[in-house]
Length: 137
Image 1 (cartoon, rainbow, N blue to C red):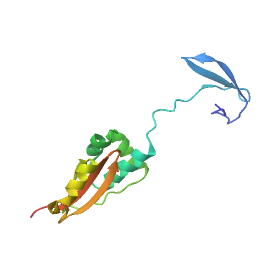
Image 2: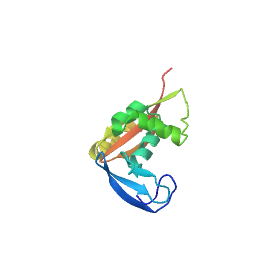
Image 3: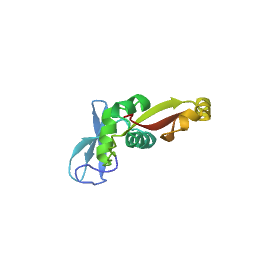
Image 4: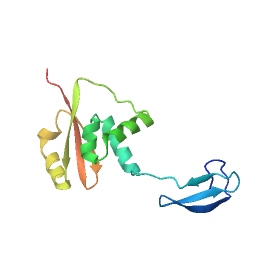
């Protein structure tokens, strides 16, 4: 700790151990405190990837299954960054997760690339192909 959370002074000293955590005392305001728990941090790559997948039309639960990140975390990021999904009822996304060799085979078939929009995004050592298809009337 470099600063007191109460008065922001840097005049602090160690003052024992409580519940196996170091306790400190601020000499400026006589405030006792312990080191704050940092919690689990998620790499910014996964935050960006989750938001990208959300914008591409995937649900929170689908993103959770693909990235292994809680759907609640994804919802919180959507709220935090004020992400608005475009609503379009005449198309729906489908996705496939493929390795590099499977991706080459997928694109070599003309029926996979005709008649719909498509995006390819990296997921670690695999690739995700998101395809938008129109609902059949």
